[in-house]
Structures are given as structure tokens and as C-alpha cells.
Length: 112
Image (cartoon, rainbow, N blue to C red; front, side, top):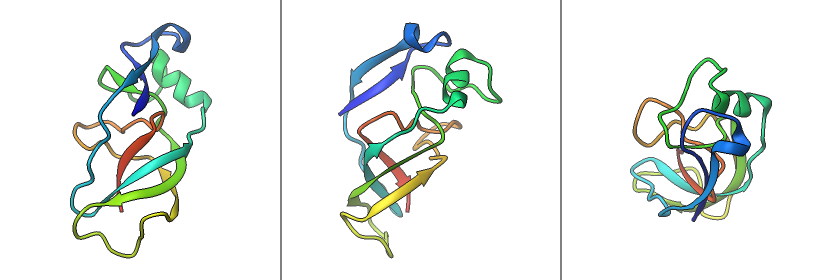
């Protein structure tokens, strides 16, 4: 999958690069979402510039607020949702680490 990744703090045009990454696998109680529309907020740009209330661990996928997409796959013990369902995702927690996962990627995993 493609992801827009910042290697360090700086101006977005200088630090963002398009990378190929593996499609993540949802765990228990999680879903894999095919991202259709990840917005670009001023706050996203301030995070990359190091001028926001938190700073991600770099390298970091850009976008930290929300996106819309469709469920592509479900992990075990996931109920009440179905593959193909449209979803809005807000403030996605990272699969690992203390910071939020970026939404500027083709797929992401989120808690159901």
C-alpha cells in the first residue's frame, strides 16, 4: 500500500515522502479500513512542523484527525460491523506505540 510518511519534523513539502508499506492485519476487535478520503487539516501540518500539542515518533504517517473509508476485513471477535460498510474514523490510536496512527495511507487498522 502507499503511505505519505514524514521522516522528521519540518516543512511538509520537505519531509513528506510517498512510501510502499505492507497492508496491516486487524487483530481481535479491530477492522482493516480502505481509506477513501483523508482530509488535510491545518493541525496536521502543524504536527509535522513540531508546533502542535504532541509530536509523533518518526518516521510517521501524516494525518492524525480522521478519514472516511470502507471496511475491507475484520479481525476475530469483531461484531456489529460488516465488510464493505462505510465508516468514519476519528483519532485512530496507533496499533503500537503511544501516538496516533496517520490517516494518509491506503489502509489502516482501527478498533471496531
